[in-house]
Amino acid sequence: MQSSAPKATLRIHIRISLQSLAMFLLKAWRSTAFGAYGYLNFTKSGFLEHSKNFNPEDMARRIDGKNCVVTGANSGIGYATAHGLASRGATVYMVCRNKGRGEDAVSKIQSSTNNQNVHLEVCDLSSVHDIKSFTSRFKEKDIPVHVLVNNAGVLENTRVTTSEGYEMNFAVNVLGTYSMTELMLPLLEKSQPDARVITVASGGMYTAPLTTDLQFTSGEFSGVEQYARNKRVQVALTEKWAEKYGDKGIGFYVMHPGWAATPGVATSLPSFSKSLEGKLRTSEEGADTVIWLALQPKEKLVSGGFYFDRAEVPKHLPLGATKSSHAAIDSIVDTLNSFM
Ligand SMILES: NC(=O)c1ccc[n+]([C@@H]2O[C@H](COP(=O)([O-])OP(=O)(O)OC[C@H]3O[C@@H](n4cnc5c(N)ncnc54)[C@H](OP(=O)(O)O)[C@@H]3O)[C@@H](O)[C@H]2O)c1
Image (cartoon, rainbow, N blue to C red; front, side, top):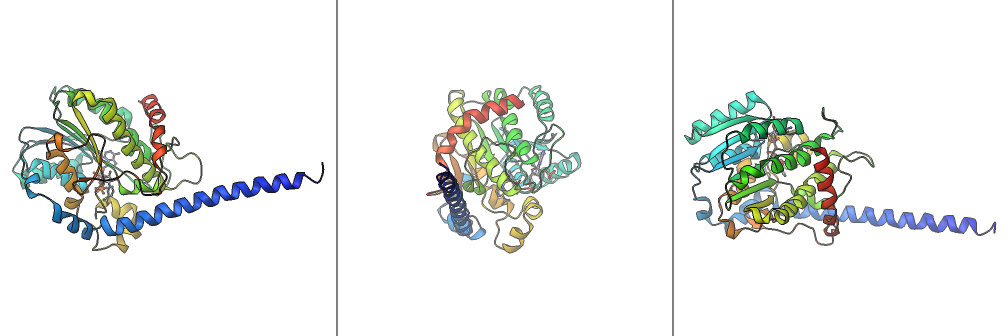
């Protein structure tokens, strides 16, 4: 009896170590594959290479009179998106959290596009309460929404808790995106069959499987990992929305912009930003696929699809072992609904 106890302990110990080693190797593979794939494709040179296959006519379309709502529209990719849509005749509602920054951005776009139908809507996407009051205010306009661009996003490196008690990255990137989309559905339905929701995710999501630990409560907090997990949720949510609301005449698309030099990247990832100085895309290049998705006839697009540089691309890295995790989306949706 006495002599068998140490053997059992040893066996358990080895099994745990093998599991941790396998997880370590898998994570290392995902990061390495993502880094190499990203360096070749997500930078400016990747954009220039891919743009050889672009059809200029795709971007020559006008969308006069269509109502487009763009979140996080005062800066970076959101600003370039709002500008691109306004310059093609759309009525653009720029959703920004800061009134002053929003007003500056609206007047810059109005004067550079000569389109006066550009409006500011103030809303803090980290607050469900604020999103609810914005959407109920906005619904009073009783207008069809043709395009909702969920662009607002953050990468907060330290754990910050919002006034409503949620981890900040999750609050903006996941709960904000989810609440905004769900609450805008009645206005999107008014523009069916043309309505579309475009969510700006990130290639960083390739490194993360879907997890139900939405607020990173287990393990040491990493803002970069939390951001990647959030962006994976956006990809899985888009699939779910496409399946759930397919009969409502709304198309759901998620995309990633590659790596663009924006104020957000400079602040959240200073060493990444510095090491790729001169190699990053412009905000306009980052916004190119968002605008393309807004302009194309829906028959050309796959609802639930993940897009990059005007083409549908895979949602998973080869051997990344992230595919099966998407089965957790129903439980994630239940959690998100309980927070609304
Ligand atoms: N740039 C890249 O290489 C890259 C790569 C992958 C994915 N993305 C994604 O692209 C999107 C745009 O990012 P960006 O690079 O253009 O960064 P950015 O310049 O920082 O723009 C982010 C926008 O989101 C707004 N925002 C942040 N928190 C908000 C909140 N609580 N409520 C309302 N608005 C809020 C910001 O407003 P303030 O100006 O007030 O802060 C800003 O307008 C994000 O979803 C990001 O994850 C970017």
